[in-house]
Image (tube, rainbow, N blue to C red; front, top):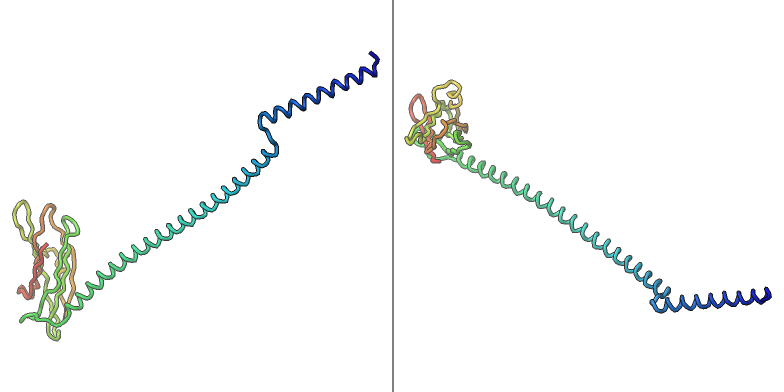
Length: 221
């Protein structure tokens, strides 16, 4: 076969092969449902949905952060209110004590001796420590200074028996704490150390003037 005819024949065969290949490709794409335009639309749809989800996530995150900040603010405000309430309660107790103290300074019948004990309180601050507080007043004009000694008797139960303990117990250091010297009033408070294992029943305070009892008052625990 002459070369020109061979070349034309080869060109025809290659053309037919290419046409068959393109036809097979289109046929396969149509069978599988592949559509480039549809894929682009789906990709654009997915991108749009992703952007909307990201925006929604950011919005929810902002809301959560704002809620957490509000909760922290409310928690801090609550703690401050609790502290203010405790402070006000402490101030209220102090004002009540001051009011009771000044009320006790009002004129009252102090008896023929003119000396009285007011607001005797006793409470345990430890198993073997007893705190006492009291106010001693002198009636009248208070022209004369009263001098004397405070004596405290504590009735306790020890080993199943009632025992009375008297303070001061003769020690020089303790005796100075119980000395009295005032014209109108004198406030006293202190802590008594008791033996271990005792049960405190009552406390009695007495004002002594040269060994004579001028006033006395008892308090139960």
